[in-house]
Image 1 (cartoon, each protein chain N blue to C red):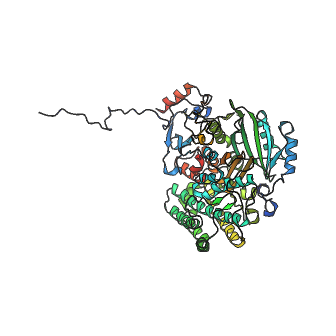
Image 2 (cartoon, rainbow over the protein chains, first blue to last red):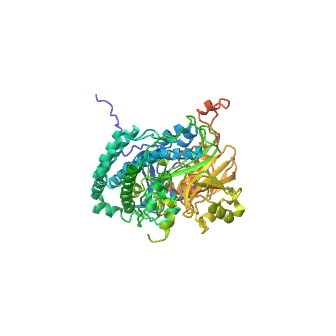
Length: 407
Length: 211
């Protein structure tokens, strides 16, 4: 007697159909289009199809989902979908006091968090009318420029990684690791420094930091330049980035680009010069620009900026005065009722905070303007017409940090 | 540099640019130019503090004002530094920050006259296409409808979400400790999120074409 034959369920069985309900993660959303643009995007012409990249995709530098409309290998249009990392930092800040704001803003731009904690501090200082001691200002500039170099070094490796070259990012991390260890000696943290304080900084320069900095300064520029010769004139890298994602000046201004993407079009807009803060008016440095406005120009610009940052650090070390590192402030801060806007030049562009105070110890409104959010937007303008593989080279060259984009 | 932009955009000599410290040394020349260019549109005299000049504009005039300060040869505010919504708990505001090569001050444009029940403001995407996402964010967080923005949908919150989280009457459970009298209130019931402009026929076409 034989056992009754049981049918084995297999995904290869053509008669079996697994019906999965439509979700908002599908390329085509299960709800009617809400806007003119959405209706236009999800209407397909002959030969076009939609594909979904992300939200978990190594090339999106975080949790970003992009719906691509393609015709063969060419991108026709794309629709970035944000919000996978949204934590509501602005709302959290409204419910925490001014000192807590610093550590909430810290993880926004997590590759260069010295900047994302500097801005809210600057805004609070404007509301409080505090004058920061000069030594603290110099230390801030020193820490920020170091962080800018570590962020830029990583960016340059990342761009190459997205184009398929694995080695450069290891060199990028080599540089970043040394700087991060240095900043860890200064602040106690490797990634989220939590170093800026309203009225100054958390700790003075110490021996370990200074000796690590001295070591690094002796070979910094040479080693970054050496490692970047790996890709600077690499035929594949240049061939894949030159002329890609080209944007002209007027369009760049209309798209609200700032930072390296804007300067790569030839507009020397840098908040450190355009609207100086801290001790930048006393320091000598240039604002490197490029004319081409393509991915390769954006890449090369980062190398020029690293050189300028090293130059700034050199001047800071020669000029840093003695003195206190914190202004005298009460422990409970109640800024005057009013509004303040503070902006700085982060590695990705203009990072701003618009703070409103109602006279209590908590901000009434804290608007965080992240450059990644505004720069990422132009990926929709730059990509159409290029190949699917090129979208990575375009997106990586805009250098978005999703922690800041999604807030 | 191909154009004369570089001199204007970046002060060549560091000493030429003013320090950010100082209480009330506003850019007087800028204030005068704003006063003459926007005479009829200002709700209050040009004000400000520190390094920011502030003007107050009625929501009906925002589009005109932005076009004027963008195009006027004496102002040329070509760089939109920020756009955000604000809920003052009695009214809504849209706040713009701008930067011009011709002035050392930031310019803040505060828009008044938006009701909390039905906040509507004109979109500035006709001048800065990059304001599109910022306006989507202000819509998502405050429910401010920007007329003329062709992609005004939620950007951070899921599409089926109904509230506007940054409004002052959207209370977090933690708020109960701040004002015990208020207690924990449920999320506000928001009106229908967006005006539906695409027709269902378009969508059906899209779905069938994709299959």
